[in-house]
Length: 165
Image (cartoon, one colour):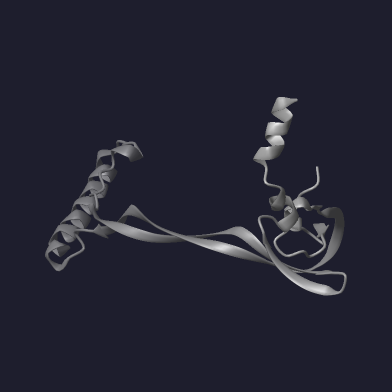
């Protein structure tokens, strides 16, 4: 009994009476409903990156003006070889025919190639609920209908609102 009276004396009596708002705790009324979706626009994030690639172009050598006598000599050698082949009466396989190689040189450069990627990160959704048009940014495309959480509480300035359990 002694502790009980001590506790009553520790709480000032005027605190509870002077601020009646602190005694009232509002509990919000919540229901779920659906809205009609009017428009969905994706919001894109643009990512830029560069990649290093080796780009090569083949250049043929031996087709220059200085190489013309070499080509003529190659033609002459082939003609002499074919005449020799006809008189020798022996057949050589086609693989043993020597064709002068045309040398190709690779002209390679290391080049930075810019790349750009776009990916959707959110969706701006226009929807109508009870005749009023709203717009919200959502993480996913909701489709034709958008599920809503509708909360109704009376307006009391500086009141403490507690969500339902």
